[in-house]
Image (cartoon, rainbow, N blue to C red; front, side, top):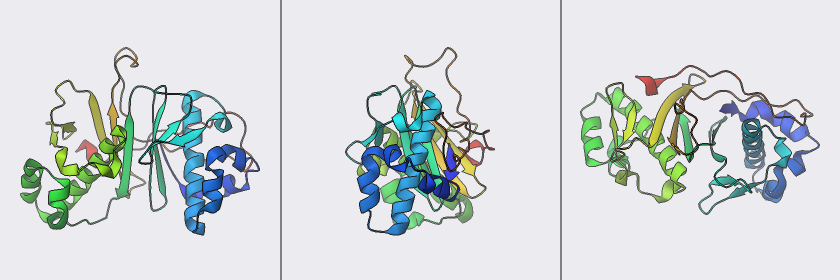
Length: 251
């Protein structure tokens, strides 16, 4: 699910229930040294709670957000029943929610240029670097950014984040251009990349917990926009909007 922090800024800050909604994050919000960072922090946590509340069909203020070592958000008391992942870049906020295994999300501006020559040894396996080096420069930049976000999403789903060296994780591509994790012979992991708001690249990683999957498995839709609440949110969960179109991940 995705939104922009500007869409949620006024409703969140004008909500008289912001303090109980933030819960344990209230002090972190109040003590944040930078005004812009403080607002972004509050809005992103509110969005996480409303997204999780929509999945669980419970009021958002009943959820208690905590963090594992490394910063991964978790919902207290739910264990593996609902797992969440949060990322934001510029004004975009993306939340991944899963009731069927670990999930990770990452986002970058689609036009961002990162140096392949400078970062190839940090990000790529030998095989990935060779494939990217053979591409025209413009296509290489796009695919390198896509690979970066996929590895970010994967390590977030594992709870490792940037602590794990990306070059230790390898990806391949099937005939449809879908990313596949090297060594995942059982197909436990699902990956997708989407173009969101026409200018952000969003990648997701999800490990399927077959014991929790509905018959027939699960589909991987494009991220759907999550709508902000009114200035005085109702006690019910917000409705999540329709999926957007899929982007470069479907090439």
